[in-house]
Length: 255
Image 1 (cartoon, helix red, strand yellow):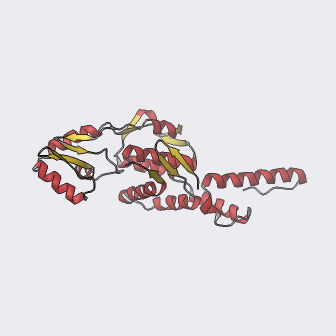
Image 2: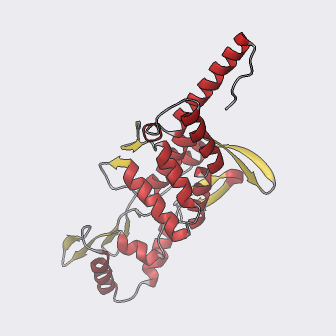
Image 3: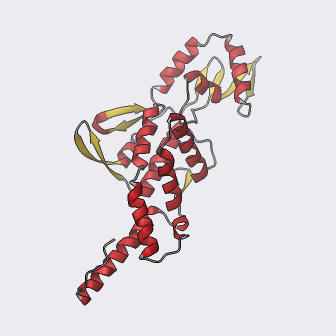
């Protein structure tokens, strides 16, 4: 499969079978499962020399969708249909590029697509703290170890920390149609992106049948090519059939 370079990371295209499996996995996915599906997709398709954060991940999910199905989507919103280009959404992604600092503690830009609470987000991204004039780096510590350290440092006084962190997170957003702004940590954003990925499975099964029955391709083709290339193959076949039918006067096979 092809790979593409964006910013400072490498994105690998999904094969047809990988994409079909993704679409099928969405069918019964609740919120927790959806988060895991997207995180797994990102870890399997992205190579980066640095730590990816929430802004990177949302952008990559939209870029991957563009590679599979194109940049244009049709949206029905409040009874109106809109033709929308996903690049507009990608370019609107905003986030705070600076780490969050609080009382000599440093928290990295959040890395996961979703957190159950702001406090759990703080723990997961707890990077360092200063004790007796010495900076302690704790990136490699476990979640539980970070939680204990943070609780000891705060002495259970977490309300002001969470308040300031909430203000820090307000800049993490993405634009949508009609000047709608969605917070990057809103689970509804992942549900929206899931809808962008969704395809009609019956149409996909028809494509498989046409590839195997009429084009006589081996089934391995579905692992070697993505959906866009397979559609090109079928379209070329249809065009050839049309040209042959014009020459012979016979009805062509329409896929």
